[in-house]
Every structure is written in structure tokens, then in C-alpha cells.
Figure (cartoon, rainbow, N blue to C red):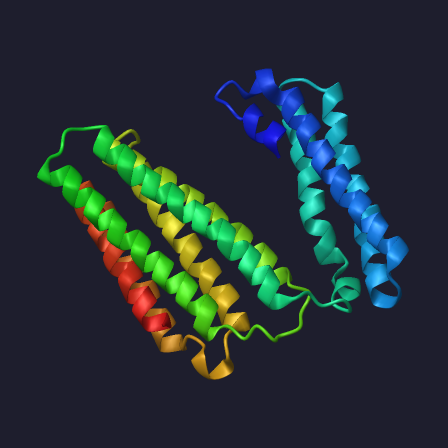
Length: 280
């Protein structure tokens, strides 16, 4: 992971081989760990470890073949191997479901990473304040962004701690793949905050990016928490429709009328405050 992180830069081509070495090493260690578990366990756990341990080598081999290509082709080969790694657990669901995960532990691990990504949005607020003089606009933008982050934190962790049934026994794939989209939306939102304030993108593109991130977060968290919530506490159809309508109204308004970035952030803060209130 350290090698992969150190290899990330604007000039990614220059660091591609070090990134690939880090990725191959990480996937190989994961596969070896499953082989080790396979040698120690029995029954369904042994079958699960055998399936994952053997299948992960396939994606690793495909990604490693990117060494023989140049330009965009090697990236296509690399991502083909990664995509296969992502989809293989889904194809083996009938095997994996016989060895249910520890739901409480799995949610705890993902929530820690979510906290880190929420921290990236806080860093974006600091970047906003440092990139310009302290005016009413910049301070207001930062304050509204902070309200938005607090509302997201409130909605996510209150649901996680109080509304989710951690005794459900599943393969955990809803949590895993749902959080893939949650983390993607948090990364998009953290980047959008700074880009929105600095006006570094075309207005329509900026609106699409930030509302796309919000919609992705809204859909992903609704999906994950709906599956694992206690049945009597699940989000109703009426509330879901109202929240979707509010978000759609704000999006259409911002596409029709050129809205200042402070007001856009105010709209999103209001939406997330309502989302948190309804779901908690």
C-alpha cells in the first residue's frame, strides 16, 4: 500500500511500474493468506478460502500482463484484472454465503475508512480558506460545507450505531460493494468542494459532478442501510420519494439558473440535514 500511495502523481506514467509492483504484491499477499486459511480450516470455510485464493490469482495474472504493453493499452489490461477481482466474489456467491461474515466487524472496518474520507472534505474546507482572503463569501461557503459534512457524519454513523441489525448473517457483499460507491462519492464530494469554490470547471460540469456525487452517496447509503436496518426502521417509500424530489428540484434549478457557489452548498447542506433527520 505504501508503494502504491507513493506512486500516485500527476505524471503517473513515470511511476506506473512501481504502482504495479505494489498492486501485484498486495494481491499476491491476499491470495496467499487465503491459501493459508484453506490449509487450516474445514468445511464451508475451507471451500470459501479455496475459491477466493485460487480465483484472485487470475485477476493478478491479467493485471501483470500490462507490463508487456504501452500507452493506454496497459491501463486497459490493468483495469481488466482489477475488474475481474471485483466481480469474482459475486460469481461465487453461492459458495461465500455458506461462510457468513461478522457483520459488526465488517461495518466497523468500513466506517473507519469512511471517517478518513470525511476528513478529506474537512481538508477541502481548509484549502478553500487558504486559497483566498477571508471574505463573507469564503467564510459562508466554509461554514455551509462544514454543516454538510456534519449532517453526513450524523446520518452515516447514527444509522450505523443505532439502526443497523448487526446480527444479520450474510456474505457481506452488500456492505462491501455498497461502500465501494459510498467511498467513491465521498472522494468526488471532497474534490468538488474545492473545485466549486475556485470555479475551476465549467458551471454545468461542476453542477453535474457535485450533484452526481450527492446522488451516488444518497443511493448507496440508502441501499446499504435499507438491507441491514431493522425492518420497522427502514426508510419509507414516501420519505425516499420526497428526498429524491428535493434533490431533483435543486439540480434542475441550478441547471436552469446560474446559482452562486455559496447557495449551491447551502442547498446541499439543507438536503443532507433533511436526509439525516428523516433516517435517524
